[in-house]
Image (tube, rainbow, N blue to C red; front, side, top):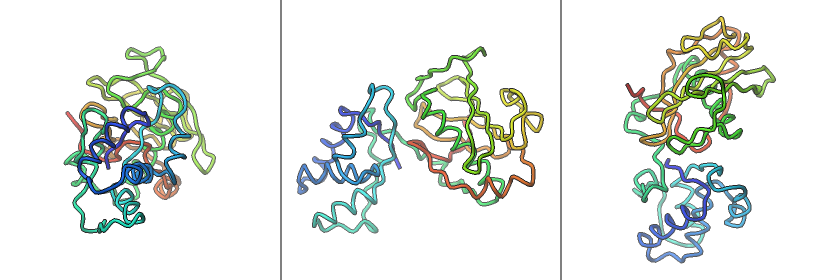
Length: 250
């Protein structure tokens, strides 16, 4: 799925392109279907979420199947299962951001270890986005830490209540280093080779923001006590506006 920031100009540009492609669909129906694709029940609910300065607003994933299903609700003859419509192919100007690189189709999180790494990484990125440490726009860092590149530490908890210390820093080329330690020990999570000296589960990764917005998959950068593995692997966490897989960019 592609993603788009919750901003009036970006949504208006995308809607204009959709109207050109779906020329038999009413403008109001495109508006409602677009809101549905982003997970809102109505366009009014989407509008209500447009608060705060535009540069701070979150990115939302665009679900093509929900968009088409909403048009079906309005009476249009579309089969979401056979349609080739996909927002991921709609990089309209600079408003629609890819979250699925070609390499994403080669990657699956099958093992408990892979799932645990993915879940901890996605949750850490979600929290950092909510706290506005950065956005998914290339180069938009709001970090204020003491490290070269302006790294920042932040604390949160897992759904189970266990403490986590996250760390984010500039990795260059609009990428970010993302680190997380469960049951953290001091600030060891900052290290580029952080392991059990930093906590009972330590996950390291990179977030891509130049070619699109996705987590670069690298579950080899993961250390986890056996007692925590199943808990982390079982968590249900969805990324907030970015993709959760893609080959590491060297």
